[in-house]
Length: 300
Image (cartoon, rainbow, N blue to C red; front, side, top):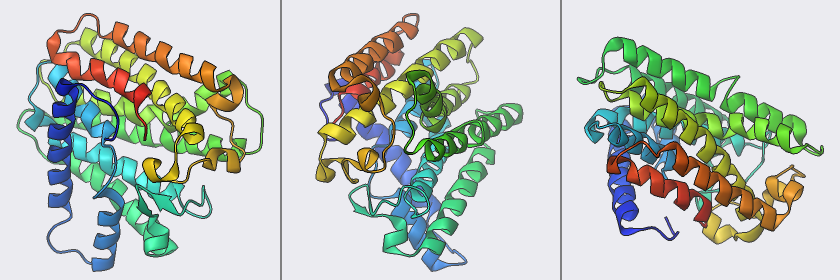
């Protein structure tokens, strides 16, 4: 992940990345009606990406005493949903970015129509996976998981946040409006990842879910603050996407509103608050604890 990590977190990240990558490869094997569509889907979700959302799924199921095996479908589903959002965000009608995850954006590697269809297919595959039977998860819980992912990705979540982002281009937002935008655009899917992971464990307690939701909301905001910082301080090669694109598109960011140093202070403060949310959890939640620090120290 090209950022400093502890030995514990580094091992957990590698383990989770390998698990979700294997799941993604399995989903893109076999017969497809369109080989071009399959190749485009693979371009979008394989060979790149930090896999933060799947790691949060696995970290959450482990934190509440569950088995990582129970969470494979959920981890794959959130990465598919995230990949679809990136494909559509990069389109000329949206952010018009030519580079993603260190390679050409999907509409550049293929064409715009294929990119739209691949995004649609990735999203539907995410829901298909969540609906597949898993021995440890009952059907009522699976239905709840589908509802959570739909809400996190929909009009009140990621899509709604993206719409607010488009509407705000060239406008001056205050801090409250900016946080509302990013709690939807970025934070909603991060929160859904944590919720889905926790729900994979049949022994989940209500108090555990409440604490994990608090954690997820805070790190979702911290993730976006750090993204805004990296858009200023990073470079295109390390980021794997165009550096300075927010400024070029005249977007309001935490850096533009607060200044660079104040934005860094806010990210660190959010990380500390996230840790407090996990104070009642045992050592099984340590990967989530270390992720809170990693998210605000990452360099891509």
